Length: 362
Image (cartoon, rainbow, N blue to C red):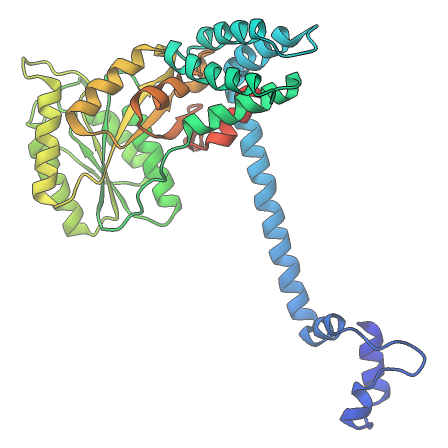
């Protein structure tokens, strides 16, 4: 490139044809080299900046994945550590090994049905002589887990406001999950609005207000004990009036009256649909991963009531039985959308099946 500029200075008075001709003592410059020269230093600087941005993004992703693995260390110790101990001293895959592997999966809270499904697939591969060594077994197990966890992609936000109803029993982390979702929405340039429809739990409204202030999202509320459906009706009206992009609705996990919780949630669902046809567009069920198999019964009950569209698994960093994520996905058919792996705002991660399996199996 410097040679090209020197030639320009030296041959200013030559014709255009002469300047374009290759030097007699060397080969002609390639079209790529001529293109690079013609772009000039500004284009080169822009490319360098783009490369730096891309490299920075890749480094941040590597850092997030490493942090993700660290937060799932207890589950990885159970599964990956268990596999290492199981494989120690073995040279080949046989039926006895698969039987011991099934026990390991059950102890990691995958559940009997899910563990059996994975083992049966491995047994079929063994019969077809496709598991020649332990590494092939591990890779086949990973592939089976990924297949169980992969679900349909989340719906695109096709309307404004996009209404998301969050449900779940008390103590699973619904309110903090809403705050993290609102934080992510603001990071994407969206305008979130929060609706405090948990009017029965003491201090629930105040807690949501505090989180709303922290993330910069307005909170629509009524007095304690108010009809939750009425709060949702007012909240969606406010979202329409203010031009909010996305609405997150907090709901009760237990009622202090004789009204059945599921019936109350159904009422909220109907009210939202009347105010904004087609809403709620998403119903996210928040489950505490530390409860293990108990989360399955919760998932079934809530899904029957309000047609859950996605699951958020919280407190994954505090349990050695994160394998229940596979049980939930397998036995309910509801896709996992997010994993909570800590208290920080960025610790609510969109669920990626491959990354999750890699984190727990190594």
